[in-house]
Length: 55
Figure (cartoon, rainbow, N blue to C red):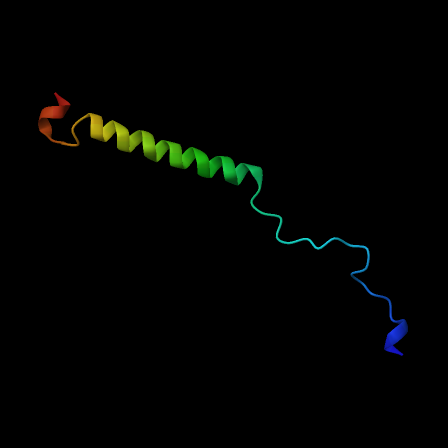
């Protein structure tokens, strides 16, 4: 009886998780770039912050 049962996966390619959407990848890349720019800017400015930097 089970010998003639149709295989529901026959002819279909196995598909895993489709992955992140394009907008999520771009948002993540933009966030990483922003953090890198901020860190480089802080390192170039000396990293010190105080009242003397505001005036």
